[in-house]
Amino acid sequence: MNVKLAAFACALLAVALSGGGATAGPTPFAMPEVTAPPHPLRLLGPGRDAFTFLRTCAQTGNRYVMATSEIPPGGGPPPHVHIWTAEWFYFPEDGFRLEVGSRRYTSLSQIPGKTAPKDTVHRIMAHRGDLYFGPSGMLHSFLNTTNRTLPIVTVWAPDDGTTAYFKAVGQPLSEQQSENPPPESRVEQSKVVLAAPKFGLIASESHDEFVSGFDTTLPPDMADNHAAELVKLLTEDGPPVKTHIPCGG
Image (cartoon, rainbow, N blue to C red; front, top):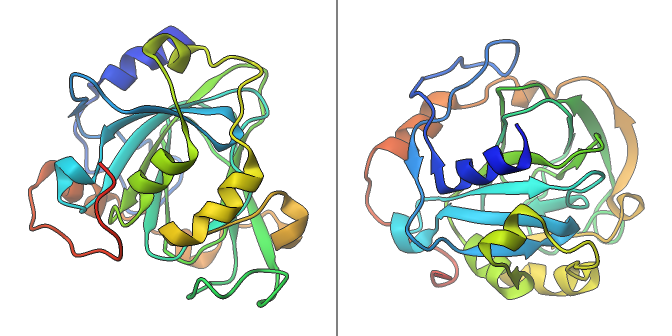
């Protein structure tokens, strides 16, 4: 998918509805159709990731937040942990390396390498159509390993601080900037690290802070990508979810 096509996908994710397989692997997952609002929230996030938010807590009653992102070559967030939220990662194209931890951190006071042990990270080369699920408390990051900008679709559930977090640390972008973020623009990672705990996250500035080593196997608890749960979340209404902090927009 080139940048222009990916930008169009940000305005309208019009792919076929499919339940997908229960296990992340060779069977591609098709995202349910999700139409962006007329003026979606667009932000530059950590790693020069250009986010277009298709759904936020304001539209979903805190049940989830969904975004498409344009990730530049070598881009992607440093290792971090969502204490209050689970996350799905959907890869429309080849070229991403997903990194996920082995441990589960259950409190904002558990900082890898400081108040808790560092983690062994599993490195997974994602393929076109792959869907992965990361439970709350799992250390994770991803990296665009190619020399071209690539799209990724991410869903966090519930939206407990996620929208508010990105609004707090991100930089507003125009539609044109979302397609081609200025090379010199970057959200300062130190700002991200300091702000993260308020929104239920533990963030690092580099791999060395949180990671003790690497593995190339898929963790057993990631064999199930919770595809049916994601489809239900995106296609069916539900009651609002009570969260730790108010909806961020």
